[in-house]
Length: 555
Image (cartoon, rainbow, N blue to C red; front, side):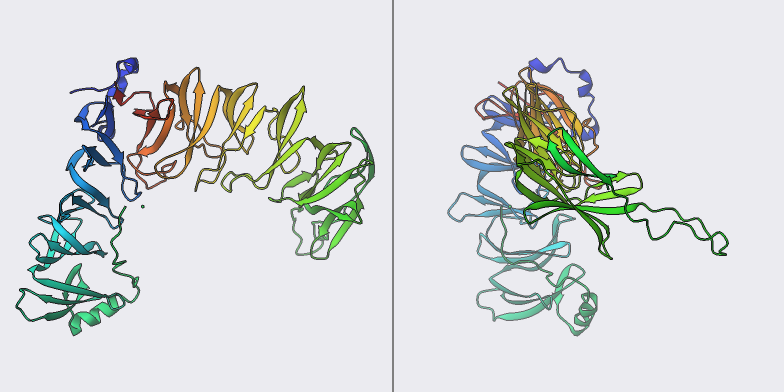
């Protein structure tokens, strides 16, 4: 057994060699100098380095077990560690329909047709394929052979064989689809001098047979609730409440309280008369109050809504510091709520204004919060945070510092940051992991106010994956590189963090190799392992590594 790992990584635990049977079935591209081959997860050689390059198929209909090989300008194909096609083809086209076409570089442009598992569908090369359609669990093929004879047959992908030759070695075959009736009108000649014959065929038990009155009636009943687009496209497819209202602000730190406002009592005391035969204890419900700001005649007001149906409300003027200007009212999303005693306040808007060249924001607090810069953030819908977050910047000692406050005007983190980098949401997994910088060190947080990574790294960069959709965070410390793949809200980094162990930057991450999974493996989807592609400082691909730090390349 030949192992291919670089010697510099032999300090890793030998337990890596006690890999599960599943891991032994992984086929990983590896490089020795300028040539590429294939190894298993443990690092033993499966195919010796002999190719100029290897490339994953880009279509998401095929797992990463499908590899294109390149040698001297010609293309070949590997499937699950086996060389199915030698590099002697001009082009190889995996179709979305589940079969693969390989085209020779010759005058005839002969083609080989294979299924997804690499089994040849035609006995010999063909020079044209006029039909390749799936019906039920089978395929119908109409091809022109190199001897200029035509074949029309049914392929069983489960058994990897031709289930039915409808016509073989015929001079001519013409097929017209009637999709609404699930029929094929076929004209054919066995030999050139034979008269033209016609037959109408239908689908029955995954085979084609001539239409008869019996099978026609059976077919009508059988297909009543079936999707009518049975054949699919005929075109060939190729590569994919506060207790007081704070009214007057005389200065930043001084204010006057308005008299406490007690909202109207609820319609019921919460109890029935104990002499009532129907007496029962009823749990007292909290008082619901909506709070909104408005501007009337250039003055700001706050309105407390006690009964939306009866339109019971109290409106008071908000007395801002003298000289305040630029008052703006903005809608507040997420319906943030704050409970005070037996009252729940729901806030519908917030206010911003400027006083003595200082910007201020007022939502639910008795005193506004100052800022120099503001950015309103709407976290992804899967972040388990509802509404806006405000990124406020203020200059301290000549340097900008940033705070994150929620839509109740409360600090999400007790810390101030040198910077907050708003990384993109993670594709269909629509939640956020944000990069923060504190005292020159990088960390990662989420909108719920949780540190995913403490600020202890030298650099964190958001990168997009190459195959599929999604992203990851490349982390750097002491000259070494690692990564963090997306962490769900309230999730753990246990299986998502690869501490910096690599001497090279990370180019790409295959999250669930060899399966095509964006970031996570959902229930019912096969689980794979993380495979990491490294590159040099100039961005040139070097090869692959596993998350323990083992390299699948050398020289």
